[in-house]
Image 1 (cartoon, one colour):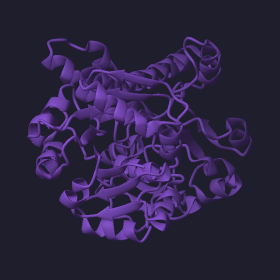
Image 2 (cartoon, rainbow, N blue to C red):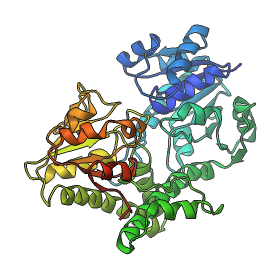
Image 3 (cartoon, one colour):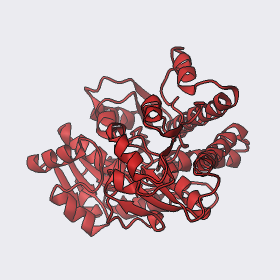
Length: 428
């Protein structure tokens, strides 16, 4: 058992802390928001993530997991300190390192000699050196250990990783960090800090590239009369391609892909390389938002000015309550700019939400209520429960039974038999 401090009780930090306590380590998880810490001490997890509630409650019962506002006290006893603080996008597209630098400066004086500080936040190449300088401790090595967690399956991804990447100049420190993951049936890659930091950005950029590619192929399918579902099925059988992230949709978003893609473009520019390919991926994604918006407007009769649009889905993906950089909200924002009146439903977003991103959108707690008097229904997030609703009731509720299925989630033939005008992505 090791003593671990986790700085930051956000999505990555809380998952890391809960999973590490589950593995038998004693973990102190620190945050600066008193209300969040009080909730967590009660076992009340503020984010929707499968299995995380159970792990937090297990850690509290075993007394292996603690929550605190005292960073200095937490790191004073720790052998390992994970930095899991935000690295938001700056105005120029680069990652803002101010939070991670502030955290390093705060804990530096209180660290044990030979403690190891671990960068878990997504940080630009060279950030290991930045943290070393902010710590001001020559006796404390800094290691890069990027996270590869998918929202909605983060606990599973942590406990069953595809790989564990450790970037360190100090091989002794790398071996000690690797010891935290003993027993996990996953490849372990030990490399230098710059390579570890690049692996994280390159992975997210490649996944974003696959999504933009399949959305572009969907546009080609619509133009030539092909069905994108059949096309990607045929592509996915090729082992060199695989079927992961080959599902067309409204565009990619969330807390990672937009920020990390733009940050990698900026990292490349700062190093003297013009990453035109990744710039194109970002451009295609923005075009996809507009293409889906146009589909909805066209299906509503050519204009949404003063007309009711129903939306199913506000989160950037299913099985999470995260609306950050959500394609759904971006498309609804564009519809609002064209004069649409929007009523939306999402099973993870309550009517009482105070999310500023939804200020001009009426959020309801019932999918049928969202459809009342709507000229068109837009399906924007791939919640499975939406497939099993009563579509005769949906049709009766709407002003006209029209659907734009931006996730190709619903059964097209079933809806057409019920009198709907149906339009998907890449399907004629």
